[in-house]
Length: 280
Image (cartoon, rainbow, N blue to C red; front, top):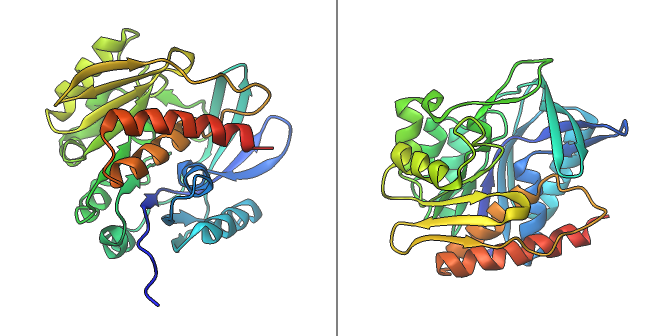
């Protein structure tokens, strides 16, 4: 029997997260997005890189349970210390980790209806972006390229100019770019100014989505203009770590299923709320 085509290939490094309560958990956009997309009933495959830490092994087990997985084993995983309270989050870099394999991405990108490239610490290079070119729909979450990372130091935002011409050119060829207010803190606070800056950096091709927490989501569609979608219902009593990753994954899966951008984003918002409510 021929295996069903994955709805979404998710690419990014697994992390080992040291949380404020003293617990250690697997994380990273690849895991958070895979959890949400699989929980919504979509078929998932993943490409990642991870070390041999107990939390990383647990994360790899979770990814393998969601669908086909290719994992590059590296000396140590990306690692952060994370504090979170009332929507505020502080990340301290513990280790940066290693790159995801472009070979693994090239071998799997055309098997899925869509691909989400979602780094957390710059572990996805321009070569990996180019290796995904065969995917019908390509989405990139900007978070991991817009972080200043130094072991022992709090993560700081980087300006778009720090991306360089090669990476910016590869990102400009994506179908959709997703960023958060936090990712774009180096640009300024005005939402339209942020979208203008993204459009100037990446040109006319990609859809742009900027998440703004309780203020909702902004969509800049070259074919349909700019729209503001109000935030979904607030979810109380659970961590919001991974909420943006969940939205990016669900949105990418929707676009891969030929949903219109606005409809896919609306469905992704609702799906993210459902996912957060289901978490223990």
